[in-house]
Image (tube, rainbow, N blue to C red; front, side):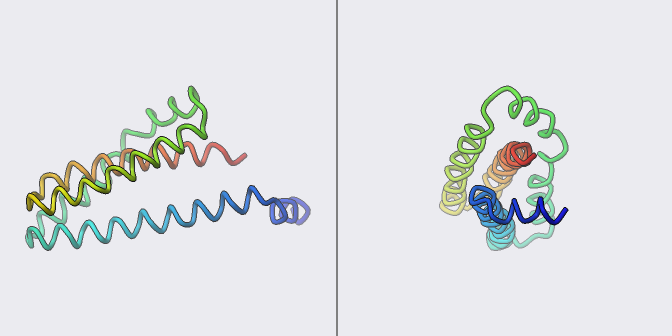
Length: 129
């Protein structure tokens, strides 16, 4: 056990994977807090906060099988990069929601962002042996 840990500790690629995963995990959780704050600013009803949370969680229920198929069929590196690029683009959808003062755009964007996060995490988890 100690020998395998020492091997991983000295592996530069493993450190880079861990660092990237940590930054991504922090960013995803920060995004959730920021989106809930934005939702509350646009619509201070508790129902809006609940729906935003629901649309963040919903993709975890059914996107797993889809992401598993994509992860097995295509290159995991390509899946990671594509999902990350799409997530980066989707973040700009929140600016559109602010401009139009539309909570419904926040719901849609939250769902899509969470869906691609599931795709990203599944590919990421399947890289590590």
